[in-house]
Picture 1 (cartoon, helix red, strand yellow):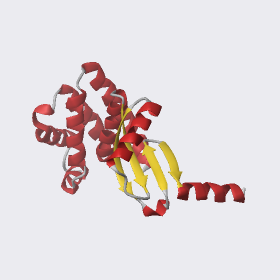
Picture 2 (tube, one colour; picture 1 turned 135 degrees about the vertical axis):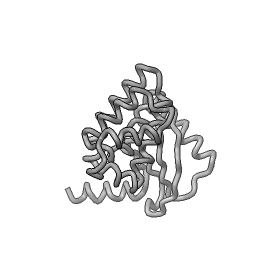
Picture 3 (tube, helix red, strand yellow; picture 1 turned 180 degrees about the vertical axis):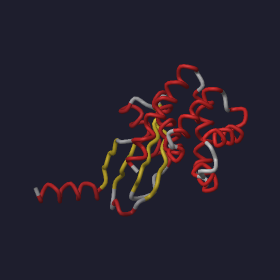
Picture 4 (cartoon, one colour; picture 1 turned 30 degrees about the vertical axis):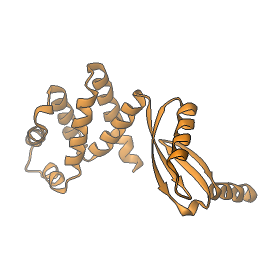
Length: 178
């Protein structure tokens, strides 16, 4: 998984810079979402991998599927992706692009795991605290994970805040072994 992200990151960053410069973030967001969906289709993967189909034919097919969203920049992007045999990275490129876009807009997605159900008031208080601490607007999805025993675990990108009983017990066990 890490290798796929490593390969996809330069594409996502390049597209993000291009979209930011040309003020077409929403267009590229839609294009990449559509391409990610196409790349996730087994039949599309078979067509791209088929040696009887040239890179030009595959590009024309994808441009046709995208329709009006396929401007010259999109066509160039597709040509590069297909030429470098990176079609399967498109879902990761789209996900990374959305992360870059959200970071640019000052928004972050948090995944909150709680040992027990979280009330709306608790969620509002937690997101307000995260907004203030991280200086970004936090949108959160919540799941219940009884394995935490008590407390919560918040994941925002690479940042993990583990305030769960399970996390504290694991840290204690590690410190006792050292």
